[in-house]
Image (cartoon, rainbow, N blue to C red; front, top):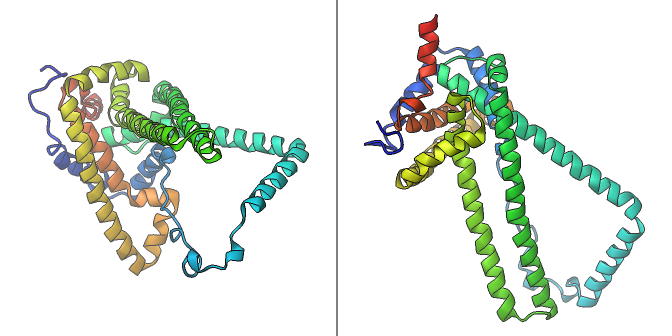
Amino acid sequence: MNSEQPNRVSVIDPVTPAIDRVKLILFKPFDLRKWFVIGFCAWLAYLGAGGGVGGGPGGGGGSGSPYNLPHEQFESGDQIKEGIETARNYVSNNMYWILPVIVTVVVLIILIGLLVAWLDSRGKFMFLHCVATNKAQVAVPWHKFRQQGNSLFLFRIVLGIISFVVVVVPIIGIVVLIVMMVTGAAPGIVSIPGIIILGLTIFVLSILLFLVKKFTFDFVVPIMFLRMASCTACWREFMAILSANKLRFTLYLLFQIVIKIVIGTIIGIGFCIGICLCCASCLLLVPYIGTVILLPVLVFTRAYSLYYIQQFGPEFDVFRTEIEAVESV
């Protein structure tokens, strides 16, 4: 079979084996210890995903319409300028301690972000190992895929730097154009099209970066798992498949939206039931425990992409590692 252009690739077919995989790993038999071990690997694998439910009751907060507020509550232009000047003087007079604090906070944020990304990269292979082999192990995949995890981590650092530049530079350009338009240094007829173009640039490049991240976790990581190779080498292998199957992977991405909607609906219903049961909904908010509770969803999501890439040939079958492990016993 030509792995680059197989005869048939379906986004529907992997659903059933992915569900069966969830049943096999988590319910045949049900083993609470296994759930907690695999849940720990899944927690590491999704450590950098953010998580968390958006908080806060949306924007407003005051009573009544702003048009009903007294005129005295609106700051005049002179008061705003005076406030800006006061803040500027305060910062310039206290720069001796403000600058070290800012630098310290920024360095701490960067170090924490790098640590989370490193653990997350190692966790991707640990969780994949558990799903592919049906084994609840932590130490084995942690050591076995050390080099692959570190390679993924370095790749993500480069991708993160690119993402930062792609987003920050156009944003700076937008801010400059807005300031120029407000101060009259540039007419709106020039600034507004520039702002729109930069905004569209951020949007398009952000989508491209999202696709790189999505394909890396869904397909490049499994190829690294099989080949025991670096992230860049496996990306080159995947690019050969992607370039020959653009429409198929577009359908994959669209079907991912459908899966997200279905999963989100199921979790939403479960959360509403959990509110009635009280404690269950609270446990979902605890990071590690929440991951364990949602483990069937995470196993399904991981297994689905593995069964999808499997359709491109036996050389992309990560589940053969489970068969090889059984045969070697």
